[in-house]
Length: 419
Image (cartoon, rainbow, N blue to C red):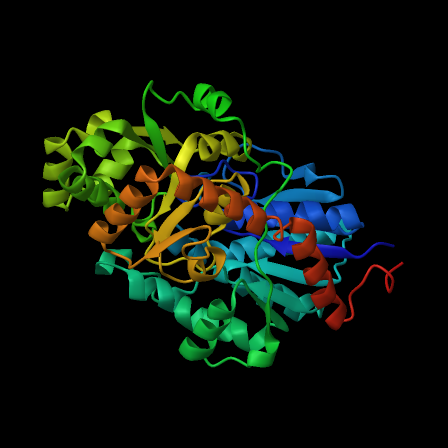
């Protein structure tokens, strides 16, 4: 009997379209890791909160040997992640009932984000199996990046994260900095933490011919494209990119007239609503006619993203906090240089001056200067592009899966022992 893994992703489904309010890198991570593990022969059930009319059990989703199981808990439809904690007992009971009805036994729980970690603790008490936890982001780090009280995380998040760290058998950190942030901000046994980088689907993300990519995404004639990809969240720093374009209009007005910006994720009205309190930014945007430069494409299927990356001269990530930054890795695999904030995992994913550039966060002028530098130097863009693609080749999801399997083995769970 092959071992079966319970993969928990409570607040967001790995099958959801990317770029929505609660969908992003974590969705990609779970989907791709499950695919890679399933190829090795593991059986995986992904438990997530039902948000639509999908059937409870979605077989072979996202891959053969891997099922997505939708558990009803709370109202049908999306919920703000800060409100999901209130329905976790209902979700947990739904998982228990499903497993009892189906007579399922699991070898290990692999949970993602703190909400799933809470459920994992409850289930492990009944099932007496080990827990591997990946937080993806940390509450105390997100609070440090918050720009006003309304952007702070749920008040119980950090306490819950501490409890999960106490109980989990192993914790996965995406970078050495991610591990260090856990050690510095929580009381955690560092020996529990394994550093396993995120990956990229190298079969999907690779360079496309420029003209083909232009045609697919609809780049206006005689324009050069910048791309921003991220969900609607102030921590992604979109307003600093828009402010950087305003700065660029002062330092290099001719270049600004040649540029356009594609924003993937969310929608136009939502982004403008998120920026509504920054009157100076909105005024400057109108003054330089930014409405004519910016294209809001909304959430996109992952299969569509390589065209946007390949069409773009630069991928810009002005984030205030990133535990890893998978968008950067996807862009690099497509040969697109990345200009990003010098924060979190981006300092490991991006090699400054080699695959792109890092700038201080919340610094539109520095961002504008690097955009101008890269756009004005075709030889530099070519060098960054070539090296970015080279570096990305070492980040396959198969490599990530192999490292996770080694971690499973440390807990006595392996394909051989369960054959």
